[in-house]
Length: 445
Image (tube, rainbow, N blue to C red):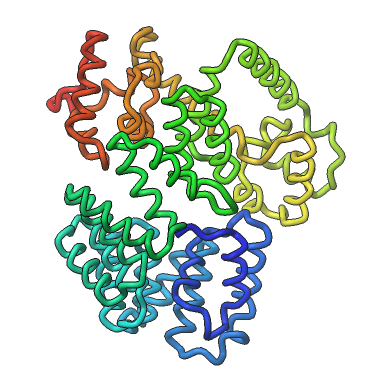
């Protein structure tokens, strides 16, 4: 379940409280870098950790310290500190959480199985053990673990969701939907249960119920971004571009680097009337003029000005191509300078990192055009093929933006993508056949 920044901050501030549950502590997996108040809270909690956590058992204290380090991005240090205590239940659970975040499903499964066997009263350990086994491709073991969790913790919606996820992977969609319904009976607002059940209903063509469930979890303080994206796609398919645009912007407000939301926002914006296009073009022209403004024209402290000069940042355009972490990693550039820079940009409706995504996307498109010999067909945007929502989602996961990108893929490349099946593959074959093209043959790999 996604945590709000406020929830993460509160957990960090209460890190020494014995009453914190593992469900609370798992919120520290939310990254806090760049979130000023949350990062401050985590750093302060770490600095005074020995003082506030003195009453905790040694294993519990080690696990909590490691989760704080992990939240701050010090994952290697956190893992190394816990390694000698990997056989202790709480340390095993923390190691499993960290490994799962890092995509190390096999290692996470081993750690979390150890934790689940020892922490029999902690639903999170059993639920995450099932999830790690599922991600490691050990579906039958994952199902057994999830079913055991549902039996032991029948009032845990997370346990039913874990079972549903495994059943989906096994192709038992109706049983998966029943599992999600069981979770929703316990918690009607459960984000993942709403999202996964909406996804199944969406594929079955039950759009109204899918829309309602996506809406439940795509708004509010901690929007479920995948739900908001699918909601935008459904509205786009209905021709309701205003709502599609609104939900894409909801995503980008929370995650400015979300490439898929940016791609679909561009598609939705391109579908509105010419007046809007002309207004957007003028806005872009004004933006480009603003980005060429030299840094020297603004009142900045000597320290900030010198640091920017040493980083070869001479105009606003150079500045908005940098992210907070890059600036803070430079010698003598601290929180005070960062605050000064962010206030300067905010006054002009700009933010750090906003142009990085745009530059990277243009670079990918340029490479595609060069490789395609500027061929008009190969440079056609993938969005113009009129693909289904599922196929478009899979294309976005692979970073496929043009027909040229697509024909460089083999059938096996595409079939490796989760939720991309034979039906989607045949759809792509048919679209490419209409253009006189085909996917890359395996022997060309």
